[in-house]
Length: 429
Image (cartoon, rainbow, N blue to C red):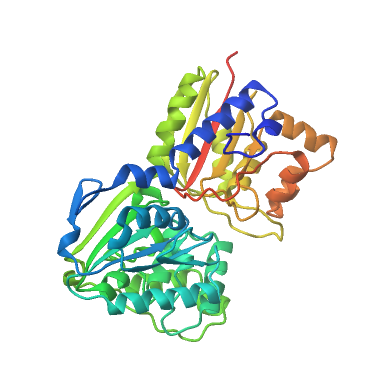
């Protein structure tokens, strides 16, 4: 039985440099395994629950509730339920996959766009939070994907949030910009979770998928005081002309909680970020004989331009590593995601012998693929098939291109999410 996180590893690993690059990406994916992170970070010793360096005396609390949100929530819920045992009162987990839990209710929602299932589950979460009291403990896992999975709009319908999100994505808005708007159109994000749970104690276990690990941005910061304002959200909506583009009424924006009292008994602990993945990737690449350079763990920009940048970075015998989150300004009608577009952009600027890989750590690059690999072999195959990369790039059809040339990376849903993992390698002369 294969132990590869990349399901088509053997089919792709046709050369030494491909094998080295794929093994390095795979090392990063294995290092961010949600279950491993929970086992390392969450421990129970009798009546004490430890999360990172924080300690909670379970005997102090009348009830203990669990709420899981995002792509790391299902696996986390199963383990935390086991750790808490009979001490767990109730809970709900909202993820893109089902959780194997008994006490915690599991709901499967949709991503990257919310649906009725998301709204119903969010309503149940709000209902649970409204019943907690002083003397209760609410443990919540917040992870990537939470911004879309949580959907309880203020003053509009969930479908209108979908329209706003799609429009901003097409125009190349950053995740930060999208989350500022979503926070001020939400009844649970931007610190609203903490307000709803007040005066209970809240423990947030955070899996960061955002550049710079800004906890207020992960899942649109449900347990973190939001520093953005209604004026900021309005400015972003005007920048992208969202009311006109989305044919929206003059919607009312809601200010997020700014009173520190709601966050007095809130503790947020970061348990996973892309730094963990990069450290594992660096170790693997070094083991394979490369000079390793970590270019950035906060890489942003237009995907195709980031691909061009990566293609020109490595020196002979060097592997350059990066993590972050690019954007795609959609002008065509094709299929694909930012990672596949990074690879397609790189294909047009490959230096001699360079291989570029970009992979979504959650395994879902707006398609069935996690990302793609670009090298001379892919370029030569595209020429034989008379497929022009420029044409596919113009149509934003990276998924179609790599489907034909054989460069797609397939992992399936990983149950983790720490932004995108990228690398570029050049063999020794």
